[in-house]
Length: 133
Image (cartoon, rainbow, N blue to C red; front, side, top):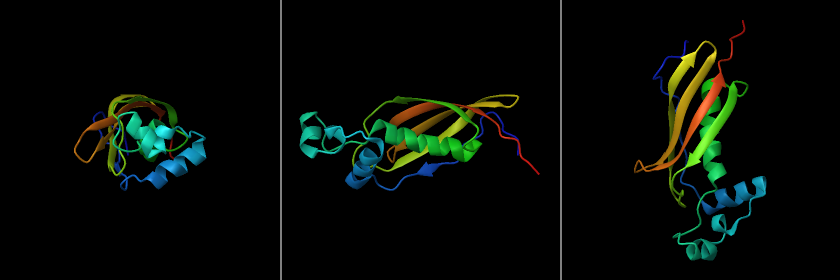
């Protein structure tokens, strides 16, 4: 199926994010910043509760990207974190193709909460994978 300008990428909707998700991500990544794990530290930083690691949110965007172009097609993914992702939020992650040139595709990706608040955006640069018969 050819890729077209304006084409939507497959949407990923997360389950409500939990403190256990943040702890599992911290263990896997080695990022044990208390802002993501300790409610008292998060509250002292002005947050109502612990918040998601930005790279966890970027990982969801990476899943959208690889679902679209395959794991071998992903060449670059540049993310910008816009707002903290709160405990209990559900993220709606998606994207849209913004350029197609030969075998290269560029797409804008986003992660929004259920209220439509932008949490992160990203630019995907990818090579289209050729189908083999």
